[in-house]
Length: 107
Image: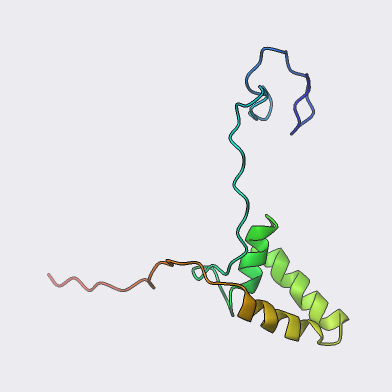
């Protein structure tokens, strides 16, 4: 057998890959939860669209923001209405954590 993640050869009775640790036996790994397309309110800069898309496509938020900026410049600004529509259509994560508050402790 071969590991589907790293491609290394494993024995038929191995439960996990020795190199990457992925479960190799049939039915051992639980199915991965499907990503949810929503706007996380704890990682947003403008509306959370880039953070939500980055989480959905399993990539870095900074890279997604750079891709959006490139799309804006390469399309001549046509990506801005697409961003606004995504901002309107993508739901927020509920419940989202309240903003951090400062506690002043008097001695």
